[in-house]
Length: 445
Image (cartoon, rainbow, N blue to C red):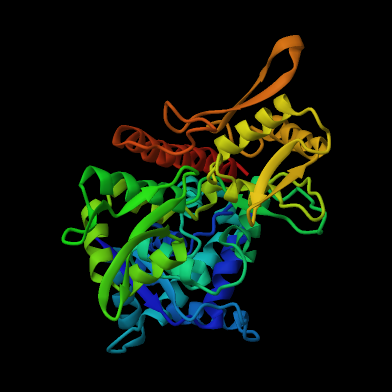
């Protein structure tokens, strides 16, 4: 039985978490995982009734310090219920008090675990304290939670993110620096002096497919009395549109189609607008719920190629807006290779549209991106997303691995139920496979 704990953290909790993160033989830093490991250690290592909790309480005092603005207003922890409640009862009995609140129990448990891990004899005998499981959990954790978006439902968290005014990208927040350093994903230096990351597969593209394809499959129309057209559909450039009523003096005048933005859709869902919620409940499937929970996890993040032309869009911006890519890495790889194959003008090698105007990147930039993917396929654990091979005259080439059998630059997203089911299953498979490989790297450090 898993128990969810939400506490108002004091500074001491943050210090304890940070101290445990930096233990040489215990590099994993999932907050919920650490509490579970701490409870397991307390229950397993010695007689729980012999622990001198007053000594632990005194040891906690050394972590006091100045307030930190980045501390979230609350912290959600998951822990195996029985062991946690047993330890809380032991603390209560030791101090002879009627009630032990969660923040105090968490503080003592973590401090005890920290002291044990920091002990030289413990380090010698515990060189790998279930680190693989800890690493796997943190690599699959939704990092929007650490930005204060803690809704219980994964889709609600995604919609809240689309509506959020929080600055910065999830994949570039400071809390990830430690994990990136462990994976050696922090070695790219960009022209602005910063380190930039992106999601391999974004959520809105697959979610849009679900809305369009499942609406067609289930014949979900805009309004069965006035507009018998499928509510959601894709235009010729693979962008989601929907039918909406135009009223005049409270009377339906006509129905028009318009682009469905993720911000507009999120607002309707978060406001629990009836028709939106009814359709979502009818068409959402377990895979799309699962993807919402792990889309913003480290196993779906990667450093982006650093080459950049001033005044032009960056790699991740083009990946996000290009109609032939639709924010999918394997499609972007194919666009790079296709652009180089077709290039006849070194100044106009890859084209993209922004504000209905066509722009171009130079061949030097596109070649730099190609070389980056050739050099970093294994380093950044991207083996599931593209191949590196030799073509004619031993020329090194890159080729994206399709997410579904018919995927191509002219067919970047699925347009029927069979393709969509294959697509969403492959999304999840690639994230989990990459998480397993990354966890192995961290646990062997």
